[in-house]
Amino acid sequence: MQNNSIKQNVLVINCGSSSVKFSLINPTTGNTMLNAIAERLNSPQAILKITLLNSGSVENKQFTEQFIESPNSHKKAIELLVEFLKQKHLISQIQAIGHRVVHGGEIYCQPTLITNNVVDNIDKLSQLAPLHNPANVIGIKAARLAFKSLPQFAVFDTAFHQSMPEKAYLYGIPYKLYQENGIRRYGFHGTSHYYVANTTAELINKPLNECNFISAHLGNGCSVTAIKNGKSVDTSMGFTPLEGVMMGTRSGDIDPGIIFYLVEQLNYTIEQVNKLLNKKSGLLGLSGISNDCRTLEYAMLEKGDKQAELALNIFCYRIAKAIASFSASLQSIDGLIFTGGIGENSSYVRSNILAHLTLLNFSIDQEKNLQIKGGKSGSISKSNSCSCWVIPTNEEWVIAKQSHQLLIEQNITAINQIQ
Ligand code: ADP
Image 1 (cartoon, rainbow, N blue to C red):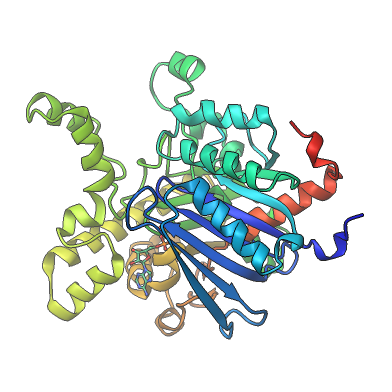
Image 2: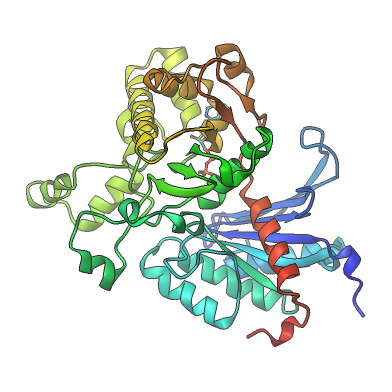
């Protein structure tokens, strides 16, 4: 008989097109025992970096790192991690695997136990997320081979936004394109928006289902979400993660007419347009320097670089406009929440965004704003203004928690029978 008492952790797997991230997390406490990242997969520079953390507070964690060369595929990276987990006697502590899956379409609005049928559905949804779902499927298949006796769950980035009403998710294009081809707004970063809303609800001591928030996830990808009574009612990303606010390398909203102009008048191929809007635009395209907010802030503040300043200003203005637009979705607001690498760390970006939102009664406390970075959370608003929070996101913990919850609810023990 297995000793279930020590099987208390969930291994979270996040497969990208050329990387896999792993976290071994206690779903109840959120304590992370291990983080690993395999990068530049399928290239000679591929590397797997494993960081083993001791228990203790996040700031004081001691860690040991190990580098493993050449995990030349997702499958190999997972196999190498399994080998490492065996060596460290950690395998026996894993109760389940939780996979981050980008697109669940309209099929999945909840975390789901992975069966053969679910893998097929995620694979079919690749046509809606050609850059992401195929990598997720590769990761799931490899993990099912490597961890044959463990239940595995899929947690979808789109799921949180399945509560949006039709008026928010439909585009003003012929309805049959939605009916026959599924062209609608799906939204992304759902796990992150859910996590920060839930955490802020706890901080203000109010049940999540009575809370109205606007959350801004600002990382390399950026999205803003309106949350009413704890549920997503609108979000800036759409059919793909290209829509919405400007991002690191993505343009966000542009006049679709620009695409015709690029193709018909400037002889761009569709592939070139795709690359231009997804990889060469946003902060990178406007600054001509970098997609990295830190680099741009440095260039602007230390070198007086005007292009960097312009790029950051446009970035902030567009985010402020997206936030203001959600006053159409909410009658009241309990708080605006910043998260993601930029939202959590850049006092400049937060201050610039809020300076555009005085009409909505946002007013920043500059002192508090300057203090919050590097994983800290807290309020950055003046006491007489609309409240504004910085909350470090933790998508891995949500995936671990939701996988654990399903495991308990569905009383899953005999996993070998799950097809
Ligand atoms: P991803 O979307 O890839 O998960 P992150 O959430 O890690 O990305 O966010 C990456 C962004 O966060 C980069 O633009 C980076 O410059 C920015 N960032 C990280 N730390 C800081 C900081 N201290 N100040 C300003 N920007 C920061």
